[in-house]
Length: 610
Image (cartoon, rainbow, N blue to C red; front, side, top):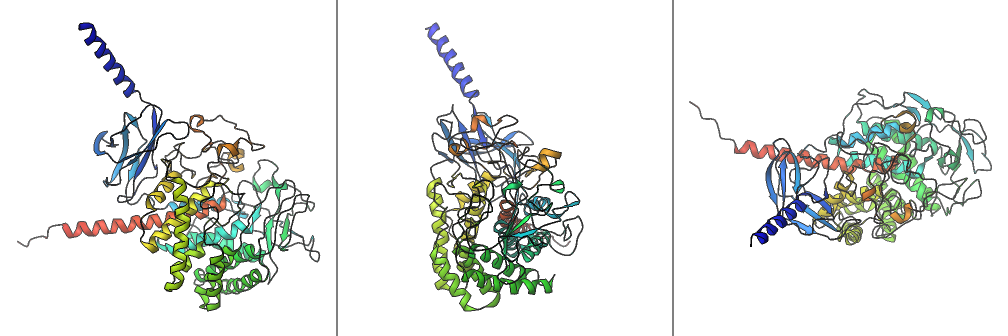
């Protein structure tokens, strides 16, 4: 009997030790949660098979303050045998906390209505760093000789002044495709949430107020370049430079790649036909995808800048009309061009671009023909095709969000709104179905620039819920938002230095970082890709070891290493695309705080007169 008791005690100690030593990771949104928002964490583990509860601890006192029992088990995930979604939405206390489950502890995170304050402006740090022509980060200028015209028999090799704009990513190519979209995204963010943006920088991006919100300054930087790239009606250019630019890490101010005319770079004319100065050719079929992007950016810019730059606003308003007519005249896609390798932005849709341009012009002019056009184009592509797909070619369906659907759905026109609001829902539903069976609720395809898809989807969810009051997709939206801030298998934010003291990319694929160790604050990195894709990428080498080796799987791969251009390169358009969502979250927090203060003030006892 004594031996049996001894055995039982030993077994109990052994099991207790095993539970105590259970290995796992709790992933959370490091930036934090609004007090009344959906809140969840994800536990991934090999050791824990059942989980009945978890606790929230105060990070200052290290004492438990709340016990949670709302847990969803998802079983095997990636390399891990078990995964759980821990939901603590009902915990609304303000402060800094961490979660514990089976002695596994999460990083600390704040709960506060101000966690998103300033985050949209923070993204502009990276946008200013990407400026071409004058670069306020380097306090110097680059690519001042741009450029010489190509693909136009009458103008070939002639000089055209197209200085300005933004570098696309780590490379120094410049595309209207991404730049016009980035410009519109920033303008849209300001239109929707003007109170979220400050004025702390001037028109060139240098510190100092100039009476213009900083996001409009940055959008104006893009519009100035687009204006140069569209010098007159039906004369448009689509990009500067090509893949000969891929000549190694170097600062833009000392870029010496020679395209045959010294420091001038080629400026590709919009021909509406197949392009490529070397052997590789793209599949261009028209001009509409480019012309539509010009038109929408010019049209919205003319409205938001008219009080600051009235003459320029009128100029681009006229150009918006001309660009739209050009796009209608020559329907089809205008893809980017390459020279060395058959790698280009493979955009295959254009009706979304004409839809957005048409409804934007309708909102400005009131001309019902634009509305008729917008509805017609919008019905041709009810759902952006990547939504619900397993894969897609590089930038095949771009922009990744169709804001034209939103602008039509919000019109005071029940017939039109009743058609386009379901289109928005269908896209969300497609991705919801793909992601509902994994603990991170992520259903986007892990293709190149997957984080851009996440940004697009949470923006669409936000806009859809604002219009419809439908709450079905809010948990998915919260999960994908949290994914960007660390609630992902690797436990890292996908935005460099946001939050400031959190785990975020510190070894990005960027010349500014690699050559001079300059901080690339504010940049949204490409994001995870399928393990099956990663295995076959050429010219990729992990330089500084894989700190996330345990978390890599066929499901998705991510490396915080400058050698991984596929997952850890920040992009200009991806960064700009987050400006709406983060500004919307800031406004939500501000409204919640105002409501809380109002409720508090009404509950205070009245002072009695003596």
